[in-house]
Image (cartoon, rainbow, N blue to C red):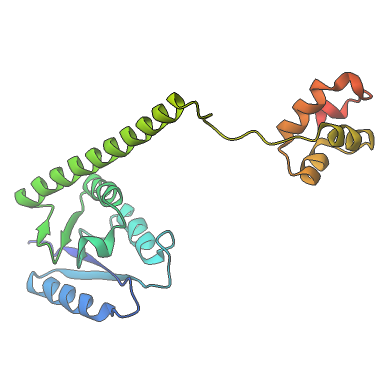
Length: 206
C-alpha cells in the first residue's frame, strides 16, 4: 500500500500589510489536491527578526527527527533570508531524504526539473560568495597599496595609569575593567614595565 506523504507547511509574513492566511489557503489546497497528510503548519510573523524565527527553528528540528517527508513553502523568499540560507537548508533536507516544494515558483526538488534548478541555485550561491570574497581581497590589496594600516586599530594605553593602579594592588582584571582595556593589553603593559613596579605573583596569576 502506498504510504501517504507527510508535509510540513511553512508560512511567513514580512510586512504589517500582509496576512499569512493567503499563503496557508494556497498551501493547504495544494496539499489536499496531491493527497498529502499535513503533519504540521509552522508560522513566523513580522515580530521576529531574521535571526529569531521560532517556527522555522522548530521545523528544522523536526526535520532532523524525520517527522515529515516534504517541506512546502509559498515562495522561496518566505522561507529563506538569502541564497546561501536557501542552499544550506536544501542540502540539509536532501541529506535527510526530505523533499522541498515552492508553490509560487512551482519547483519540486524531488523532480528532475527541480533537481536541475537546485543545482543552478547552488552554483549561483557559490558564485555570489566567490565574488564577495574577491571584492574583499581586492579592497584589502588596494588599502595596503595606499599605505592604509589593516586590522584593528591599536588602543591608546595610559601606561602610567596602569602602573599606578597596579601599585594599588589592583588585579589585572580590575585594571582592565576600570580602563576599558583587554586583560592581555594590561598584562603586556605591566610585563613591559615590570622593572618599574614591585614584582608580585599576581601579575602572572590574575
